[in-house]
Image (cartoon, rainbow over all chains, first blue to last red; front, side):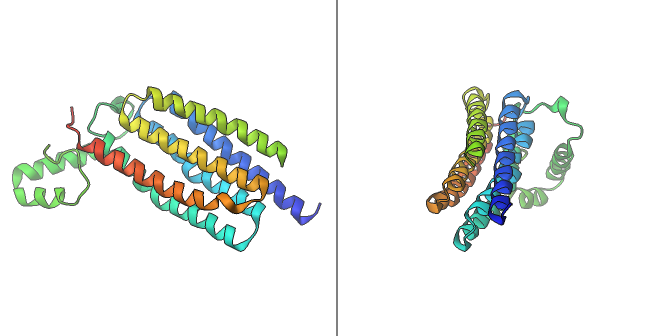
Length: 141
Length: 87
């Protein structure tokens, strides 16, 4: 087997694995019960699946400019996917869309209780916490 | 490589269809935002697979644009949904 054939085979395996992760996310999106668990499943093709597909594409193209572009796409996705998931999770929390009976531990609830206690205690601490920019669920709306 | 292309096309088609089901049925706007992100990841995978299959790098800038647009879209939907009055 030549080097080219080996590289193409590895690229094919990477592409199929990435597509399988996308399929898993699609099935999970239909079957999972609430926003948080669907988000957990949706992050897999966005990070690992995409990296595998980009790796397969880079192994197939094998030129410097193309590999640089693919690395750029992968790094951008790695940087932005957690931010987007965090914002969606924060937005989903105060609504009734999430199943609280499925949560093993609810760490944000403790934080919100502390925040509420501080707000009733003194207005300065609450003002500095809500001015951070993330529209927290307990920001007094 | 043709076998790989056929397999990947079939898998991504099923994944995109299931994602569309969630976009249509999703009870809240956040479900739809998450499902749209997955649909975008499926589209990126499809375009990258096409580029790998034909050894043609023309479509690679589209991947950069899609990654940026997906991030901006889901963040703006999340900010919009957070501004609603909580029940």
